[in-house]
Image (cartoon, rainbow, N blue to C red):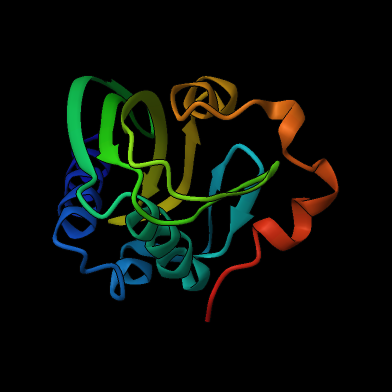
Length: 152
């Protein structure tokens, strides 16, 4: 579906420009954005993505491939950035390590009538944390809710 591909490109471009305040405009009111450990409504998406650009201020998105689906698109990409800010994870917060890391993500996006209805982003937290030199055992699962609290 061309709508989904266009919307995906728009969201990536807005993220790279750090222009995330208008991201909810791309979404239908009942839509959601989900990633491992958190699901947010469109109005909460800018805060969530600001936590990522805060942790990786030089974050880069490199598309690896895309497939059109019946009601949307699936995109494989590599994210790369320098971990120079606090990273909030489902396992707790991770202080800046200064490491340059890359991790692969698969985004599955559904769209209808020119708006995103669902965006699911899949990646492996354990691989990302390992690349940062962080052991899961060293992070507190009890911090789950606080770690994912979004700044307003």
